[in-house]
Image (cartoon, rainbow, N blue to C red; front, side, top):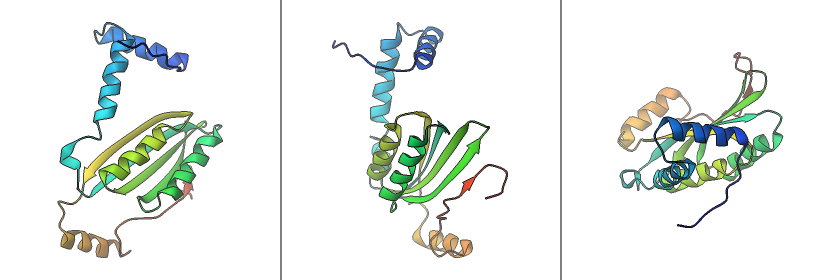
Length: 166
C-alpha cells in the first residue's frame, strides 16, 4: 500500500484519532481510507443521474478569514445558472455561515460542492441533495405561480446577522 502524507490542523488530527478509538478502527489511516471512499462515492449514486435536483450547501467559516467569503462570492457568480439562492448569516460573534440553494444536475452540483470543499479555511461544509423531477411540470408551475415570482426560487444575496434585520 502506498504511504501518503497529509497536512491537517492538530485539532482535526485529534478528532480523527479519537473517532478511530471510539469506533474500533485500527488507526487513523483506516478512518481516512473509509472517508475517502465515501467522499468519492457520494456523487456516484446512479439513482440521481439524469434527474433534476435541488441541493442545499452550508459553509461555516471564521469571519476573520475574508478569503473564504470572497471565494464564496466568486463561486456564486461563476455558477449563477446553478445557484438559485444564496444567504450569508453571522453565527455568534466570530463565525459566518454561507448557505447556497442549488438547482441543476448531479454533475453540476458535485462540481460546485467540490470547489466549496477545496476552499482553504472553511470549518465545515455540509450539503443535502433532493430530486425534484418527481413533481410534474404542472405541479412546479403551480408552486411558482403561488410564490408570485414566476420562477419558483429566490435570488436574495442578503448579509443578515440572524436577528431578522437585513
